[in-house]
Image (cartoon, rainbow, N blue to C red; front, side):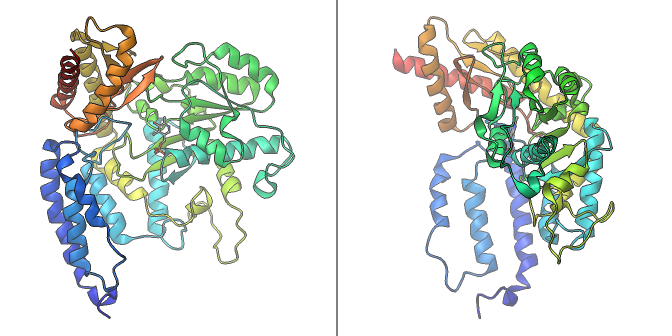
Length: 478
Ligand SMILES: *Cc1c(COP(=O)(O)O)cnc(C)c1O
């Protein structure tokens, strides 16, 4: 049959070569492309059509995807995508991601790929060292920080149910009281999502705050823990709107004093540990019971890449293992089945891009990137403070710059609407991307600088485009 891939074996290398040639052109252009080019937006329609019966063949299909993709993609791996928290892909990580596809390992079971399992063991050890986490911690790679939060909180749930004499893995939640969960106002929706999936309830989180930014009320937490019974604390390192960090050291003290479980969501902020300039922001994380982080944010590894670490390494196996399937092999310290230590079963060898970027650039290279992003954020902060029509709203910690457009003479009550429209226009314009949020009750822009390609010129352009669009909106109104 024409469409049978068995008849197209010899096309594989040619198709990959085509991708590699397109990559050269695309990557050369990337620093100069607008983040999104509206003139190509219609190309997504070319993806559509009826399910092919005969098929176009390897070369035609891949060529078409390249034609559409390289034009219609959001060029978020370029230097000027400051929306959300979106990292780029270092050259080594990007190439290793291709290797991951080339080798197509079933990365969950040692017997299926000792290579993938060993790479995962090695990168987890490197990552613990990079972050200053104890070598004794268990770990597993996940598709994202949402899955890493799920992994840590699943272990927390197991621990807590045990305190009540229940094996939640085997018997579920029936008969257990509600799990007390405490956090600051900085708690990320993905932690709530994890609690929701675990049957603990999204709204089980009690946020104890002492101001309208959401900072943790440590004394209130102390009082609550005195009477709550076994509880889970979620520490946030850091917060996506203003860039602040919870006081992890104090939370670790309280967790120790009251016998609580401390889970730290360090999706991006755990990387602050990589530089002595910012390590103080995450002091205490090395005493957490579980820690979540992302590879596809500040490590600049392609999607999907996350990681979870757990102080009591046996809990991962107890919370996620126990399949009792006769066809699954036994494991030991060396022959690890990572699919029994996390929420996934079959999974790609996602250790390879992490391995490659750490092998290529080392601790020094990744520290340099972390420090450069902080420098760029501080530079943008200075641009904001120098500009009479911009206002900085939060102190800069690592890479988030929370500010708003505030031209003289515009009344306070008109500013939210003005900034919201500015945010929409900015995305429409497409030269730079940044999103709006509500910070302390005010609509604000919150660009996040997390891409290895970003330079001074890119952040200067952001400031000038914001001012240009703001001025245009004001003139249009007058
Ligand atoms: C991005 C983020 C998450 C979720 O990470 P995903 O990789 O998108 O699942 C969780 N917590 C914080 C603080 C984040 O910034």
